[in-house]
Image (tube, rainbow, N blue to C red; front, side, top):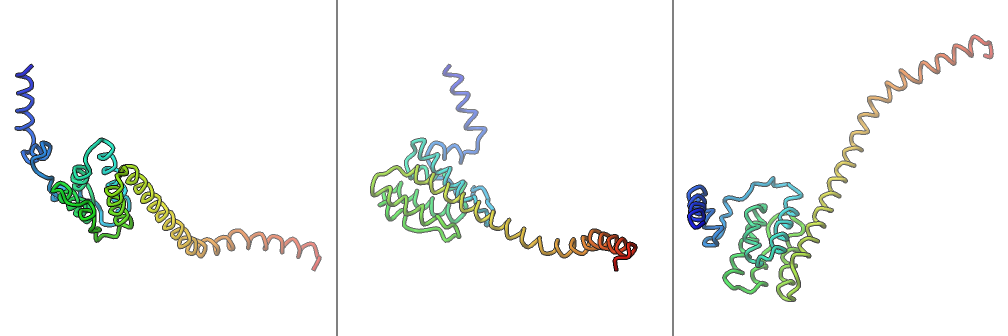
Length: 191
């Protein structure tokens, strides 16, 4: 049994990147250079980052460890804010100081996340549920924006389609009916 455990530990150490092993062991902080690239205009990147943070918090991780674990998969500016807060919290800084700087990004809820974290640290309230609610609100706003863009596109498409199909409808649908009725009226002698 001990031999199998030693072989497994050796396989993990030899097969994995040593940096990943040190990160898993908690010896070093994760690097932001290995972050998963996200599109700069991805409206759901912020919400998915909040979902990862909430999952880490619900699993029982400390706030600093959860922020450090979430930062590599976050969009760049939010990752900088999360890793800054994680570093300051792990050094023992005041949570109000650690969560003070907002991301310079266009995410509307970045400041709300930082306010939520500061309020949670001050009151002792659970942060996970607030993060989940903030992710849901961010998703709803992204869906509303997508729905609004689709409605604007349908309005913009209707004009050219009307200009193309209206003459065809008149030529192929109305003109033959009017011509047929005019022929019947002229043959009957009413006029």
